[in-house]
Image (tube, rainbow, N blue to C red; front, side, top):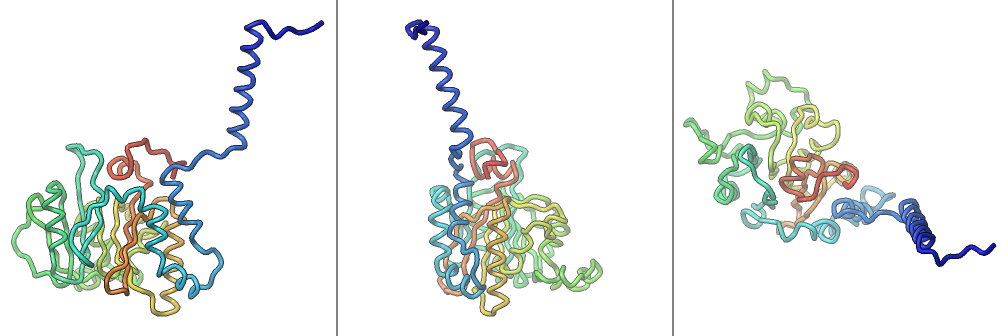
Amino acid sequence: MIFKLSHPSVIFLILISIHLTTTILKLIFVPKPATTIRGARECLHSFTPVRESDDSFFRRMWPTLHQIVDKCSAKHFKNRFVRYGSGENSIIWLPWLVDHETHKCNTVFVLDENNLSMERELKRNNPKCHVYSVSENHPEVNRFQNPEYSILTMKHKMNPKSRQINWGTDHYARDADSMDLVYFLMVQVHRPRFDSINLFYGGSDQIKLLFTKSPFDDANLSSCQFNVIYDRPKTRLQRRAFKNTWRRLLYDRRYLITNVRKLSSGNRISIFIINISEPYCWAKYVSNFPFIPKNI
């Protein structure tokens, strides 16, 4: 008995079977294309040496870090970058994609000088933002400062190692120089989430606060954007710290390094990091597409 294929229903069933088989094989054997964020993270990993000494890692990565980030991740956001300030006294800002009356904008600047040019420009272009600026060189302010209309300046010298020394609240009350960033954000600013934190002082040490199981985690603090000035490592321990910091940022799925700038002095770089793990930050600053954890 010869099976006839001329019947339309038989041909239809054969085509459906072929389509289903092809679909199943694709799901099993063909990897899904990476999303923009995931592709950027994978690209950064591919350019990062796996087994190199601290000195070799530094010699290879420090001169080319800005080129690697530009190739892997900056290209996806470059058209949206906005710079406030000029030269070394400048930050990168990602404008929000959505806005709502319930959204609050809070930004913090940690400086070592009394220069408010960046803060003023940011406030002028984003009047909804509350801008906090802390520096040991800011003058003492006794009058009330309304964050709705002015920049809140605070006179403190931030000590990134104060928490490691286990100084308590009594010491904070006695000595303003002992204040660390987490204590400042929790006690002085009273905000759990920030839109941007900009570290121009002690950035090489302060950046470690972002890691998993860090003081930031302990205090349930978060920020959607970070600008960190990182000093050129000079000693072997500093080069080891640079290597560990870079790898920790790569393997922490909460963050994506989106820009690195070599500053004119040549001894520092500016690192721009965005938070890709919080749905709030994702929707407001990163993408209009839905937040899906597996895509990061």
